[in-house]
Amino acid sequence: MRSEGLSLPQVAEFMGLHENTVRSHLDALLADGYVQRESAPAAGRGRPAWIWRAAAPTPSPFAALANVLADQVALLSDNPARAGIEAGQRWGATLPEAALEGDARGAVIDSLAALGFAPRLEADHSVSLLSCPLLSAARENPQVICNVHLGIVRGILQSHGRDPAGSRILPFALEHGCRLELSPQREGQR
Image 1 (spheres, rainbow, N blue to C red):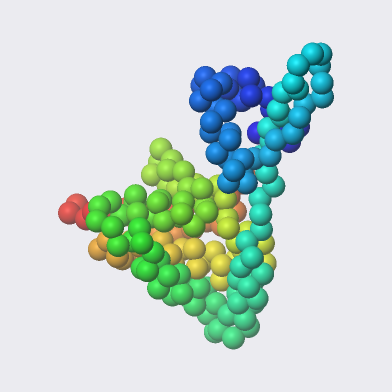
Image 2: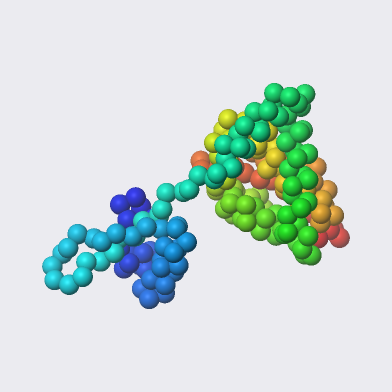
């Protein structure tokens, strides 16, 4: 939604959906804090329309902690990037999506979505990460935080019997995010 907000008919037209369908979804998004609404200026008789806009993202209460921990790892480790990958691999292997049977790529995408990365599978089989739950920490300490994120992916791939070595993350490679390249799936792997 644009910063000036949109009316219900504008949202419905943009989405290509009926206003009643959009209204119920906007109400659910409002209840969960993802959108805000306010009365439009009165334009004649009757009740004024609602104007809807995306709510400002709420910073994670753990973002500052992540930044402090990343600073500490960078100060104390001989190889902060490797330390980040190893920590991420342990974390990735514990995620619920990592334990599910099925496609490793799907488990990676589901896990990253649950963690707030807004992943999008691209036609070239790379994954665009359109959001970062620890963006400020990643900007301050990319050698640690971005490698933790890579480690998460590698931990999930290992849980699915995949060789994670060819997977890599390209921090800030996109205008609004990062690019993830997964190791190619070989015959017989899930």
